[in-house]
Image 1 (tube, rainbow, N blue to C red):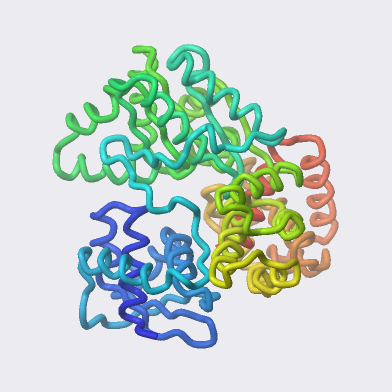
Image 2: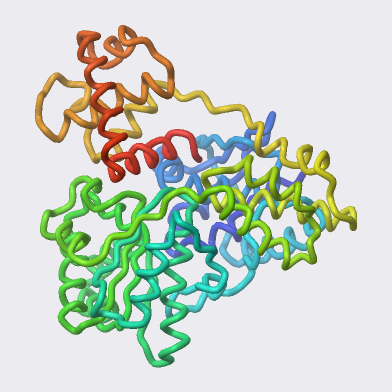
Length: 459
């Protein structure tokens, strides 16, 4: 295996989802040092770059590499000297060649991946209402999205859609943009992630181009901002979001946000901004039921002349209950194998092909990881949570950590008390009971816990 060519191809894949500036800043001086026992060791130029890739781009890297080389199961980052930086053109060209070479192998990648993103709007034409499967878990969000297209800037402004990873928030967000653009050719539409919005803002401040920045975002008919939770703790970004929304709203122009959590659960944001998020329409997307998962698979299967038998689809639908993206990824593996052998798959073949996906050993979750993820989720310092302070903003996150240590890791109350700074074990019992009751009676809070579990277990 040529590690240089593999990494070039992966970088070409990653480039589809990040800006050129980010590519040049974080990826140009990276490389695959080695692949050993299913672990790919990525060399980076500094400890700062290592931390940045781990925290910000791990998901992109993992998906790109495993799509190209399914034998890779884990990624580690190491500081090492790079000899030959990879330029952008090399990465794009390598991706094309590698895709051609691997076209007969099993891959795990969304269908219609090659459809180009519109450079003016940042919209991907593959995301439409027509191929968005509606079920009880997302019908409110779907209906609200359609209502926004019919009467932009009036009925639900802003529209705030939230839900867990891989459930279709981005699909719905871009479907709004694509439909409005189709119906109103001259409409000014822009899709952007909150992270990209922040990056553009920082660049505009540094280059003294704030008037251009404001002109770009405040003269639209429809602004779509994905993953708005990433502005937590970023005061200047929050200020610009606030004023941008106010400007557009006053002109009866539509704004739509998505988040992995409801407005109340986003930490470290100004109350005036939280109030704006909640001032329009808030709609959540839950987990799809079995019937909906089957419907999604059957529609995708129709596009391949029914290469996958129904019993295999049913097995897949039962095996992956919570993530549509993973569901489609599993189906794509089956389709690739069926095409390779030029005949439909049997159920036994299906189980064998999916075994590497479904039977992955669970990653060890340490107490330190639970503390770290919960602290980051609520934008708090770990030492604050582990302290004995009774500040209101610390109590609930602290209790959530205790609950997760008990429910997910199976720790005893005494062990948890030890891990949490020598607390009394009765405090732990009280915390676990309180969080359990809150989950049962408060759907919004239950969603927070689901998101936290996703962050613990998902790459």
